[in-house]
Length: 337
Ligand code: KG4
Ligand code: ZN
Image (cartoon, rainbow, N blue to C red; front, side, top):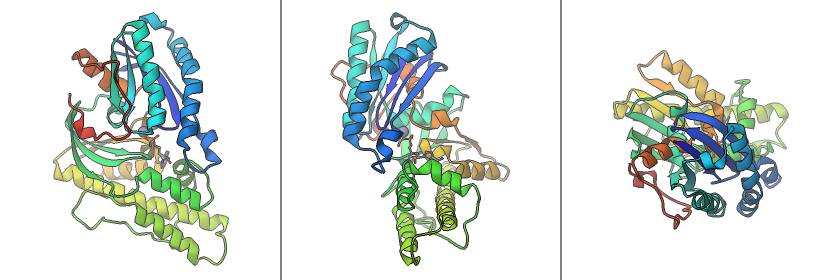
């Protein structure tokens, strides 16, 4: 089955052609980062307008790269939610029109389901496994017993980890998006003598809280006499990343232990973080757990990731009607296979 997948939930317009939910023929991403950077974050209205401008040429280019014609497509899958509703609507409307014109099935897919299953495009990870979805909008831990079988184990009670990276970068004048730039600065590993709190780490819960770390950074900046020097900015970024990585690794390992799961999948934009990847590499030698990170292009928002669940559901005869609508919030547990 040859699928066209479309993603427009936030600030990337993405399209992919995937065969049998496994083989990526093309996977293109039109990033809007430059458009939003001047505002220090995503401006929803601008995001929708840009999606509208680029989706048509992007799909054409994606088919060209895959060396296929639109008549070769067997179905269209699209992110239905969660995300910015105006942004989602562009992808959903385009997908509906495209599927209708081609007379092929259409399916709306959950964005986080896409992230969690992206790894399967690179290597088969057997069920069950623990999935950590760590992105700009999510920091959620799930027990995954199969496609469509998700049990929420813990989640952030305030900011998502990626959101905290973005907000701290903004405070430090490092621009948007914050994750990659903080990651770059933290490579030095020089935290100075700065130690930020690790919220909720001692508690038994598998929930997270990141707004306290962010506030601790703000308070630290207020206590400085004047703007931070370049070196201080690096040290603050590094100490912040150390705190977030500490919390993420410890809670993820705890969840896997509690659920008796041997395999762990880390997904979403924050899974690109080199400090997090390094920490799990080190841990691998000390535990019997196997930790899987998709390649960076499959961690960040992309469309190919939707094809794994898309292919599975469509093969089972599950599809969406032309009344498919975008949804800004949609708990993953409500998705069933
Ligand atoms: O999954 P994603 O591309 O979009 C959402 O679904 O939110 O994740 C975007 C988030 C942003 O907050 C961005 O700052 C963060 O992922 N991010 C990173 C890194 N690369 C992207 N965070 C930490 N380290 C990185 N290297
Ligand atoms: Zn995402």
